[in-house]
Image (tube, rainbow, N blue to C red; front, side, top):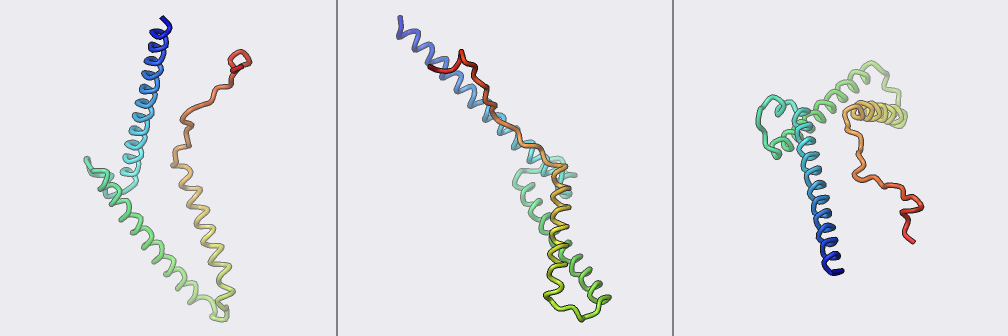
Length: 138
């Protein structure tokens, strides 16, 4: 009598744990798919194509990031050349460093502000329920 009830309870517990693992696995799969589609929409070369593999999305994203970095560095060099031609050459390298660092920090801060608008807020996977006095183990 007792062994049958305990085996039923064990089977029910096993079923629930399997069901929970399946739900977590499906959730992770859905989130991964969602993030790949989000990345695909951000990369111009993959956004217009109807079917793109995940590997292609990642490769194109890497190429796009490299392109953006090269464009940014060339623009910075151009702006530095323009500002250097306008300024006198009396400033030493030690006087230029604080200005360059300040500009880098400002660009980084503006980048962080821009990217925060597009990020998905972190989600809690499981919430802990508060136990009442009657539910607490003794």
